[in-house]
Image 1 (cartoon, rainbow, N blue to C red):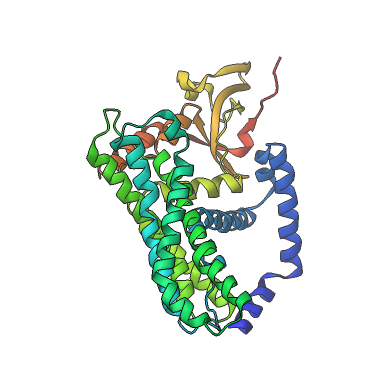
Image 2 (image 1 turned 120 degrees about the vertical axis):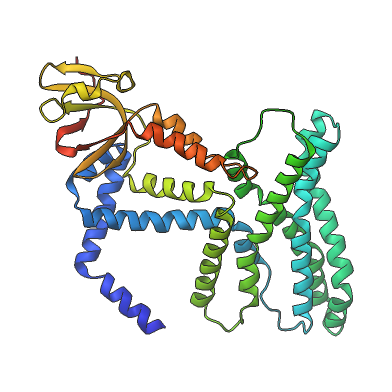
Length: 383
């Protein structure tokens, strides 16, 4: 396996490849800082664009995995994969994982109680996160002590006093408190999910709230899988193999979640296009050659067309959703609103995705692909 990786790296990291990669990175950073990636794409070829997209894909995947699988990543780092001087560690670790899986229920249960079931004061709501953290920390400490005390004490009975207290602090206090923290870290992926969920404006009833709690816990449960798989691997396995398996399992779980939470692939695509600079989700003024594209083609008020030099140039207010050195896909600036709305999903309405996608496609029908040589971004004043 190592020889194959070496051969692949040698074939990729040629002098010309290194020079091209470094040059593209410097130019991209330079024009990105100026917010003028349109100039960057005028001078690079198609192969270079594909390289930029590839690196943007890798970066976007890594960010998604960090956000959605932060619990698994920290679980693999903090909870030991093996403790040689504890013969019963496998059983202790199994109990620890069960407590972790169980603890994921509590944060959403507290939210359900504080914001729906109980009529609590605003002061209590303001401190609900701390109340939840302290409560779950106390519960995990008690559960860890009750489930692991017998095995742990038997294993450390012959150890010296320092080792005994170190093990007790680790398994009765440190790891349980870390589990309480992990249970609350699900807020990061869930914030993305709930922010893009389409909900009714009517009074919230029991079943929608219960559905949100269920979705929250299932996301938490599924995102633990890579960490659990990591801990099931042999300690003598090489680090590269462990990271590869972790990455593959994360991708499979992310794909599974995406079948129901459809905003994930949308966010991934948006991140790739944004990081690469191929799409610019900001409205600008563009000057177009009248000889190439007569201004009558942009007569719709959506374009906010203005004459620059009669019979030669005119300007429009637009958004470039796709830019290369050959074409620019210009869209009316109000497409940004429906584009952002198209991220939303409704897990209880299978037709919602189709409806919102059709609405976006209607707006996108106004988009026009223009030759890059016939259009220039021009935000500076014309007078």
